[in-house]
Image (cartoon, rainbow, N blue to C red):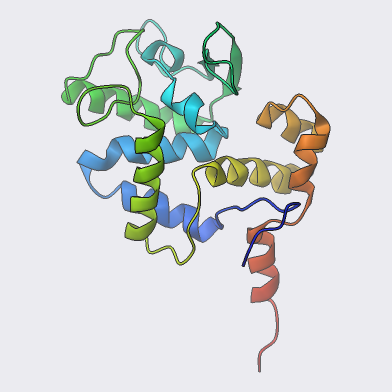
Length: 202
């Protein structure tokens, strides 16, 4: 089912569940589980995820923040910038477990240390994020293949479909222009799947 220019490519609820379930099975995969939980719950772009430091996510006492502090966003990678993104209670719980996981893995918990670290102990790269997502789609049994940005589209689409509020969706997506956000007023893939499920076939 190809996406049109006016309809963003989004994961269905079933696909989101499969992805999170697959990454939660083994302790060693918990970092990846947190990556997709963050992407689906906050709508962060791939370079925003990769740019997160420990101090952006946890306060001085090690508690998950209720608002993520972004220094890297959109294309502002070389200069200081600040945006804040709300964090749900469920995601805060996962982030608390992730901090304990990082501690057991002996990863740095210094405020300036990267939140997401590669197997080699370096800040995760965009290439690794994209490759890992393709690997997990296969493991989760996806029939279709998605780019990493589809995770952001899925989060924004869900906000619009659950609230019907385009201004709220604009704020969640952190779009400067409402015109950009209007893409989410078009029916998403999940809405199409629900409609097809209701068709009579007998």
